[in-house]
Image (cartoon, one colour):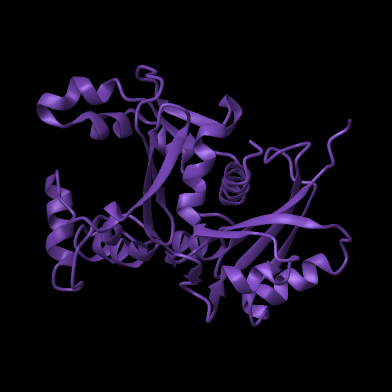
Length: 284
């Protein structure tokens, strides 16, 4: 007997945009059947976006998983850059009372990691492959998100982390100067305060005012008109990245054996939310 196809909803909920997509039991999380992008600020709630998205799609939803840019506590999430309080039970009532799960957007990204293929990553440190070892995820975006995955004898389980808020520890003279520059300007100088989108204005001023790096007009114009100023593959490929990562004294040899990759798959948080949804619903 042919198994009935079931449809699942996944979403990446951000302060600027919200992406919703439909997946089915036939394709799993690997291929969205349909997706749409909404300007988050143009809606009063996530429920309103879901209503509009499903209004033109006549199908029964069996479950949903949403990655939210903000803290998640139980069945509720507060979007960091939106005046929304997202409630799983309220969302469920808009999709035929199907189960709804909420998770932080970086945790959603971590759920995607076990399902990535070689085409989805760019290797910067080859190291030694060690099946079932602990995996770390670091995401320098607006903030510095971190998560990790642990093998439980059957599959990887993803866990959130606030490692980005650890004290910034300088390792070079320049980094020491940066710490001295940031200390009187920030209540707490964390790694997020030195390596994230939030840190860019301070880093820029530090280079200009302390390091006396010239600020040419073309650079100002280039930064203001750049479509995506955060693409870093050409920079991170340099030997300097591996040298900095492994420069840990007696642990240099150990760290040189740890592989390092850059995730290049588009819409990784959306894919991760879909992976999480299928995991929870037992169809993966």
